[in-house]
Length: 160
Image: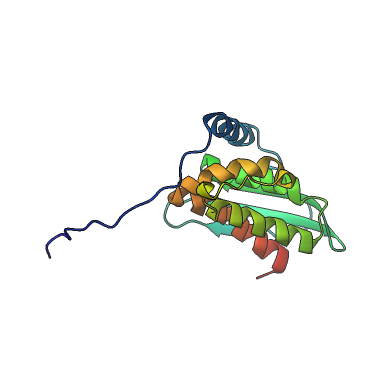
């Protein structure tokens, strides 16, 4: 089959402001180098394990509840920097939230990585360090790294 004369146009969103991109990179690297909540929770808290078959990343995530509130969380991972930083940042934000609040937060993170920076939206302050993941929106292959964590969190929150 002959190649098409009209290549499919590929449009990437514009690069974020250099200062903002640098800040986001620093936040991601900080969480990767010194992850919060890395480890295993004692007791009978089941871990949800997710794998990315394309890159081989493996993430196990545990959430501990008192009633409807998340009281503690932990993760272990054999994964890239984006996956580990995402787990660190997300678990920071999930502890202390209700299941419903946590699911809203997870959905906001997923929306953040799907959003086009060209839309001009600035990530909301209430996302905390998770705002750094806005830079991942430019790299579709890296979105799977974030989704590995959000998928595990959703399963841990809903059991599905």
